[in-house]
Image (tube, rainbow, N blue to C red; front, side, top):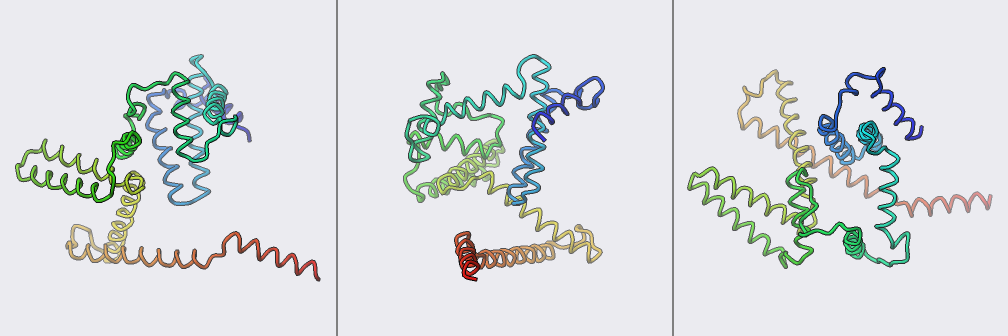
Length: 288
């Protein structure tokens, strides 16, 4: 099934004989669905589930088709214009692939990318421009800090970053003693911003790390709920000590599962080993 089939389905849904809900939608009303579908793709990727990734990418693609159909109805553009535009941009932005310019490292590519943007007339008065305000705050902070670091505004070593983090934590503690909520909020924000800086410095995406920690929390808390249900108890009837014990059980089970997975991966033959084995089998077959 080609993409045109999906376009035709959307046209039918938006037609007078189509779906009342789909006909009612606008760009504004669709914004939360677009964000939701993008995050569901991320979740599927983190679960490393190919079937789910395929399904969620389809849902995200449907949102793109939806927006293109609305634009088509307004005589602005359609899906073909979008595909043509991004195709031209990618060819233009990759002269080291489609042209004669040479880029040997990813850093060379990024530098070349900025040069090309300026040639296209996309000049920025600030290196921090172009980072969407609607981005999740941790990711936005990471992008802004990364751009500043590319301009040389960065620490030289990890110890300096950790020292600054300690300084921000102390300022937060001082704010707590003063009991001023606005000051506490400001200093707490500084800690978060500094933690993002730390994550960038050591090569960790803060949004990914935070999302994984949230998933871990949900998994462990659900374990507590399950065990409470098995004992015919409500969570409100359990002591903190009892819940902490179950939390530790869930944590221990996670660690054992990780060890088993690592063991399986260590024993799993590599692609090169599999190819060598296949070559040996072919040789034996030829001899026979």
